[in-house]
Amino acid sequence: MTNTKALEDIKTIRQMMERSVRFSSLSGISGILAGIYALIGSYLGYRIVYLENTILKYREAYVLENQTLIHLIIIALAVLVASVLTGYLFSRQKARAQGRKLWDRSTRRVLINFSFPMVIGGLLILIMISRAYYGTVAPLTLIFYGVALFGAGNFTLKEIKWLGAVQTLIGLTSAIYPGYGIVFWALGFGVMHIIYGAAMYLKYER
Image 1 (cartoon, rainbow, N blue to C red):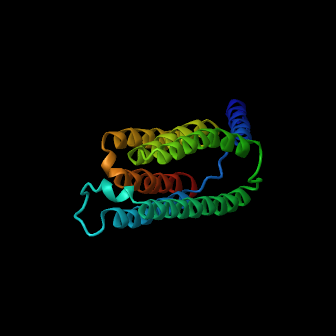
Image 2 (cartoon, one colour; image 1 turned 90 degrees about the vertical axis):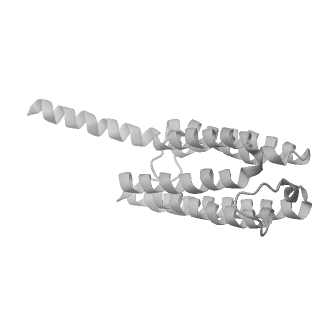
Image 3 (tube, rainbow, N blue to C red; image 1 turned 30 degrees about the horizontal axis):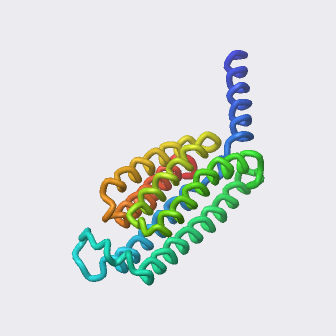
């Protein structure tokens, strides 16, 4: 009986230590909503690029038009802002429910490890756009996002590392098929976020 209690105490201490170094306030619902936002954005982008043409038809020429590029950037930024805001609100709510502060040492670690690859990737993407290498944008966004998630996963829930690995693989596959960037965006940022969010909700929040 004493040994059982000792093991339970050790388990409790371990969980407390993990909570102090790992960010655990990520919300599955926010992941699902981010995926939905991405699917809506991908649909709008697809309509802009492919117009009335058949599904999955290759139409890279339209992306070369400045007006089209501006529209795609606006959609991408809108999806990004909506996803970040949703993630923040749901994470704050979950942190309060856990009785902990949202902004602590673990949060800073996650943001630092996530932000560095994203900033480098963002700068590289801007360079590619300035050189009119538009076919590299979709693969690079997915690859650097995946690398950022994989790095941040060391300081948060382990599922983040798996999501990062999958996003990176989708990005590499997208590089093989550059004419279908929007389709891979929908798969990576949309479908995979919905699957990840649902899994997180069922495992940690239900």
